[in-house]
Image (cartoon, rainbow, N blue to C red):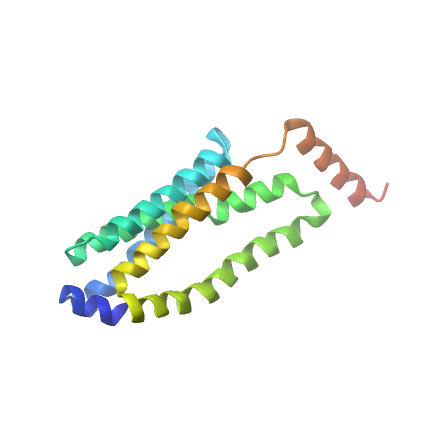
Length: 178
């Protein structure tokens, strides 16, 4: 993204470097808020709202006419990513999976996130090379709004109260060797 943004906005390297910095800062600050909200309103609303916010932030970022606007919209996307990814995903997995399998389950969640970090940049580079930076941001937005949000509407939920208790009891029985 760096060179196309430098050219598109006649921006400095520092201004363009602010984009990932503010994204990471806002994502990091949103994670504990997401965890707090998760316990109060549940994963579906938190994760879907976060993914929707991220998607809208990327869409608005694609429409930015000034570098500072882009920094703001990407930071807003970071809030959405912080609300919709690691913390809620791990919390949900830990509620669904019995104790002896939780390490593997969390490892798979984190590996999935890392796999996305490996696959996504080459895809975005290709989009930027062929269609410009704004189209790449629109592509991210489309993925968030048209794929991630519907999947989260279906999958982001806690197990029924009885099932969570049964899972914890099964894990405790297996851990004690009974």
